[in-house]
Every structure is written in C-alpha cells, then in structure tokens.
Image (tube, rainbow, N blue to C red; front, side, top):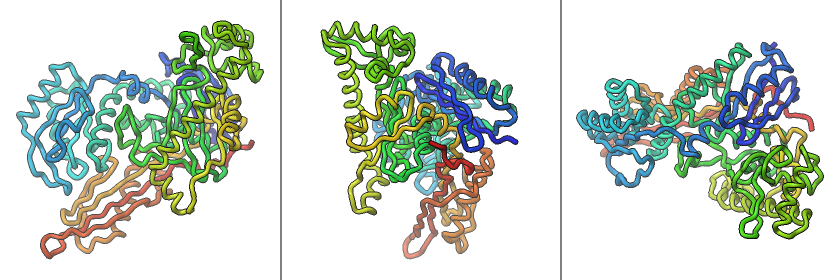
Length: 562
C-alpha cells in the first residue's frame, strides 16, 4: 500500500526532509545545502529517508527548491530577448523589463479583434538582430493576446522556422490573464529560466525514478500548492519563492489554531515572514514581486530579510556589525567566523556543535570591542530581535494595503491585533521566545519546527486556478492558463453556462497536468457579467469566471501531535 509521503525543502543553508505516514512524521533529516550541487543534496536527503521506508510504499515526493529564485535574484539567468506588441497606449519607455527589448507592429483590441496586422519583414529583421546578438531565448508578449494570440503564434512560428535552436515562449501560453506588463514580465522570466529548470528536472526525474519508480513527483509552488514535475517544465516561474511558501504551509501544518499570527522562518541565510489572519495565510493580491517587477505568479504575501543564524558577526571601525553576508557556517559547526548562532549558543547554553569554538570566535570580537563576552552575546541577540521586530512592523504597513487584510477589518469592525508569533526553522527555538517577548505576544514552537518546511511540502495538496472569459458577441471564450480557447453558442447564453464552461476547463487542465483527483474540490471564487451595447441594441454578453482548487492539505492530513 503506497501511503508514505516525502517532502524535501532546499534552503539557502540547510536542506530538510521528512517522511510522513499514518498521520505522523516517521523520520526527518537535515543536511547542509551544497549550492554547487543541489541535485546531490536532494538525493542525499532522499536516500536517508528511503532507508526508513520501502520505495514502493512512497506515494508522492514533493520538492521545494530555490533554483529559479536564485537564478533571478542573482542575475544568473541567461540573456533573453523580449519582443513586445503593445499596440496603442503607454509609450515604449514604460516597459522597463529587459535590456534587450524590441517593439513591433501588431495590435489586438480588448475583445480580441485585430486592429493592425504584424509586419512580416519587421519580424524577420528583428529576429535577425536577436540572432546576431548571440541570444538564444526569446519571450513574446502582445497586449490582449489572452483574447486572441494569433500574433504571438505567428511570431513564434517564424522564430522557430528561421532559428530552430532558440527557446521561444509566448505570454498567452504562460498566463491568459489581463494586465499586459505583468504577463510580459512573467513570460520573460519564464523564457529566461525554462532551459535551466528543465535541465534540473531531467536530472532529478532520472535520479528519483531510479530509486522510487512508481511515486508521483511534485514541486511546491509560490502559492503553497503543488504541481507535477511534468507541468512545472512549461511554467518554472510558478516555483519561485517556494521556500517561503514551504515555511507558510509548514506553519499551517503545525499550528491549526484560527489566530492572527506572524510566522517567521529563521534560516541560516534569511528569515522569511508571513501573516496568518484567523489561521489563513495572506496572499499577494497583485502577484509575486520578482526582481522589482510584479508578475502573474500567485504567491503568499511574504518578505525575506537577509538575517539568519549564519549571519556573520564582525567589527568595522570599532563598531559591532551583524550580517547581512553569510561567510559560511557557525564557528561551532566548523566555520571560520562567528555568527548569530554562536552568540545564542553561548547565551542560552544550547550545546550546539563545538561550543568552545563559539567561545573562541566571539571572544576575539569581544576583545576587539573591549567588552565582556556575555555582554557581547546579549548585544547580538538584542540587535537580531530588534531587526526582526522592525521588519514585522514594516510588513504590517505593507499588508494593510492587501484587500483581504482590509476586508477582515471591515467585516470585524475592529483593527487587526496580533495574537501569536510562530517560529519555524532550526534557529527558531533560540530567537522566537525573545522576539515574542519584545512584541508582547505569546509564541508557539513545535518539536517539528526545525523541519516544518519539509512537512509543509509533503502534505500540501495541488492547486490550480482557471479564469475563463466568454464573449457571446464574438461567440468565443478564452482563459488562463494560456491556451484555453474555443467557440460558444451565443443563443440564450447565461451565467450558469459560463460556470459550467469554467468547471469543464478546469477539469481539462487538471487532466492535462495529472491532477484529475482534485478537480471536484474546485470552487468558484469570482464571477462577473456585462452586457455589450452597440447603438440601441444588445450585441452580446461578457462573462468572467474564476474557479480554483485552493491551497490546503491533502485529504488524509489531520495535523500532527505536539
């Protein structure tokens, strides 16, 4: 009986894994992440977990990885050209997305009607310039291509015909949603990372299939849900921020109380902060913010700050400095410089690793500052707690602009008040009690807090949102994910027909992505109807329906014991 679940979360410093079966964590493991060999790190964790359960008994493996996040954050993504067909409206200077941006003729209006055709010679000349620049990846985005993507398809067909070695991505394949700049950005980042992601996916699939050939392979997305590894190959950007998503889902897995809480995942390199409103995570209503640009990637409203257990402690001009850089592991774990972990190791007598190494490393800093060692450790701890508290306050100011936050205050006719700080990550037991005391609220820690991210990944269920637009005047429908399109019968078309179409589209996409078992869990989350009037006559109706499998846990997960 295949009943076991495995979750593996790759963090900047540590990679965690859990084996979950029969309602409990059977085994957990934590290893340092080798940034130069993510595949090797993941397989080291997997082999450790499979030593405690037969591979044929594992039903699903879920991975949370920083690969796409790191590629975009560090600028290591391969050079990519962005071809835009913006039509009339904003000036070209408004689209500051890529240094290699090309603007072409071609204009589709909001109902999907062609106003201006593309220029074939202009297309060929532009592709020639891109090829001459040595660029092998192209993103193509046209305004309102989600209503009619014929221009994007024409461009892609021409590019693939002239330069078959190039990777070409069109925006409507990635997202069928409105907001042209966000769709263009999402397409651009997808084209930039898709080759690297698929190389990683190839290696992981081959290695995991060799160990557990019959289990499902899933990836955790930024919205806290999973998708199949196969489906992620086309949309790697959905995996960005899967680390913060894993910490949020891990928090929900450990704390099932309906409280207003802040979750803080204190890792080695960064600390991730997210908000729960009555036990439910807050979402970024405008989509994930990647490298300064809003996208169509659904994401929790999270913040990552460069402060963690491995943040270096040093002096500059006789002044104590903490981070933001990480120069290796803590001294107690063989590192060459003292860190935040070393300070808490001494102050709270944690007994981590070689405690004498923590004393020796921080004693050198204390001598340079001419202060007692215990005083230095208290100063480090106080500074860390103060920075975290201030970061949470700053996040509250940003969160106040989120619709869900505002609606909560309107419905409950009172201001939002924090009830609890929830600690996640290996450093949480040392830091979170002090942080909660500083914020004057209780704290929550669980025996599984150090591996909560991996648990969150293991028990998260698949998520999928489908948005369908119906135009009875043109007898067409289109939708997101990109590629949903077809004809409708305009005669007596009603809202219930649009709902049924949206449900059918979701089932189709679920089947295509290997998620058919969850299609019946979908719920409609938005619906609108507009009449189209021309002169004195009604020309047709416009319907917009949103339906989704919401983030949550697999059916058999009922929580874990304290």
